[in-house]
Image 1 (cartoon, protein in one colour):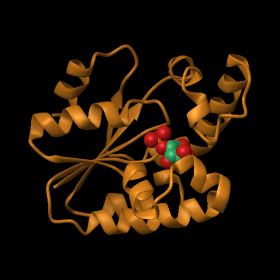
Image 2 (cartoon, protein in one colour; image 1 turned 120 degrees about the horizontal axis):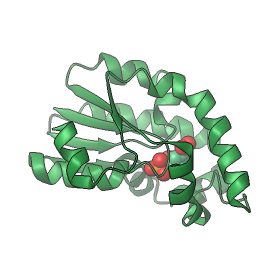
Image 3 (cartoon, rainbow, N blue to C red; image 1 turned 60 degrees about the vertical axis):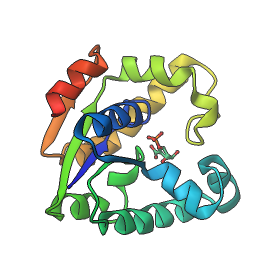
Length: 169
Ligand code: S3P
């Protein structure tokens, strides 16, 4: 079985994913880390040197790759993974995938992402919190149609890791 977590950048996919993998006794895999390892480059450098389209093609390719695994995995997707190509269809149609959307509000995402925006290629150019809030709002407006296709939606604002794990399990 593959438990796949989707959600916007900063919504806790990796943190929750690691903890969930421990609880379920599954392996944990972060799709970004997997892409980085296979491509021998940080995600930031991939965006910088090869461009976003190249990254999206690789992201779709490695997602397919991971979904062929027979292992039990908790998979943290990238924030954009479900929103490109036919990734969301693939995730929904795969019988061994259980899909969860970690849904978080714009103010909470802003607070979490402002501190670490420099390591994220899509938002590193933004200067103020107000700019970041506006960016996230527009971006979520485009992406929500994909995220909302998840059969399971976990409202994640102001919840502890323990509470979120209990809900997902
Ligand atoms: C992206 C999210 C990132 C990473 C890349 C693009 C996005 O993953 O895949 O920077 O389009 O939202 P995280 O959500 O794990 O930060």
